[in-house]
Length: 185
Length: 254
Image 1 (cartoon, chains in turn brown, yellow):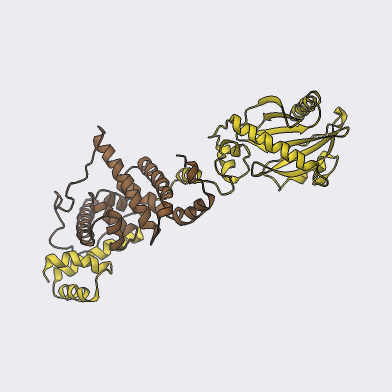
Image 2 (spheres, each protein chain N blue to C red):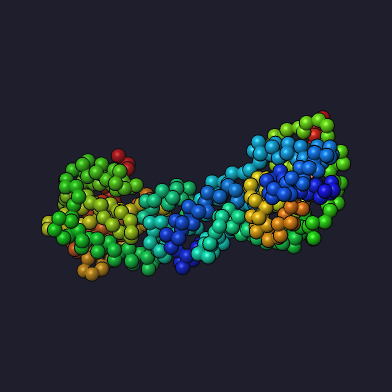
């Protein structure tokens, strides 16, 4: 990746570094959860920063992190589209993603006991197993700490959709959590 | 409020995204509904568990470097690319050189431009009081003088016995970078030997060219680029370069 000469403005590069590079770990984390592949995540983040730098002149705020995430999300969706056409594609983005997922929902009755704590790897696995677009919403909220408004902007959906997706995501994660807990017994 | 509504709104309550009016409604429902209260407790526990476990990832160093590399470097002048890396004195560039990832090929136009700058630097040095920063005929004085001034330590070799007197060293400025110059004299003729680090460790044989009446002998060896500039004749400058290179070889072998 080489930035064109017209982009070769050291002052712009300095401002961009200061504004965007502190979010590199966050961007990489989001890409890991969206793409579930380390090498693809790396490529996506690199592409994201390249695009962000190109459009940095038109960046007006307010917050850098959601702005970067919106770009990153588009890059990741393009990667998904590419995978779809590739013979090795394993997952498809559900159409009309707000419909009830196929597997069973949260059990009607909450557990009486305390929920078990899992190590980081297990939690990552549970989160990564969520279906899209619920995984995306969940990660933006619980791991990236974005507000509903910011998530809505990143995912380009109304705030109401963010709320219903998040409710669904947490219900799904709770089911998976309980199932994991049952298995670990 | 129904349980169905509460099951969605309870999340907004947990996240502090509800306005006061709606928050009170959800709380009122939860107070009177054991099911929803227990669910909310579980969601909060899961949320807490996630917050306390390490679920984020750290970007690989290689990714950070790739992004840094793609951005224009602060000190580099725009649109000068490959040769800048030949003057590898910045830490990022040194790091790249260290990994051996980048082989530098000098492009002809860049080479030409650098030669122009080297000759200009030579001319500047001939103005009164500009030739030498450290005056010494002793290589053991001149060489340490460069330490801490440049990332590269230019070789300083005494060639007095070969008819070229070492008279000192100087910091100069070529290609928007600081560069080391070792100064020799033969009779009344000054020879500036400019030395810059390069990522390319391949040995490049000498090339002699003439620019604005000055002769330039350029070569590369062991990760350094050399330009010897003088108003000496091409034959004598070639002699200087040959003696310098054979002294270097003798140094390395001895």
